[in-house]
Image 1: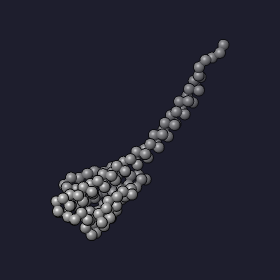
Image 2: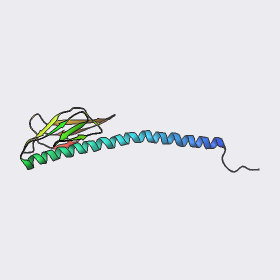
Image 3: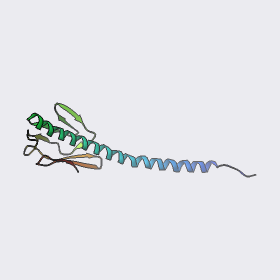
Length: 129
């Protein structure tokens, strides 16, 4: 008589292989998710810096953003970030839209092993690298 089907050992081996593969995929996807989080945080920071610059020009007054360890404040609101700011600092835009001398540079963001920088040039250009 022929047996049609799988033995218990075969089923356990296949399920074990599937479990190991899924576990590896989950571990790898966490790095992918961290990359998305840090890129998103950098885009938010760059966007708010551009808003501060535009707001300074529109209102003909200085606008300040104060960066702390994992948050920053702008226009009286505090925005929490899912990343660490490695070099807390203050950025001040003059009414011309240019950052005041000494208040520009690089804001370094870090999440686990991933790092990104938001760069503010002396001319007021804001970019992510």
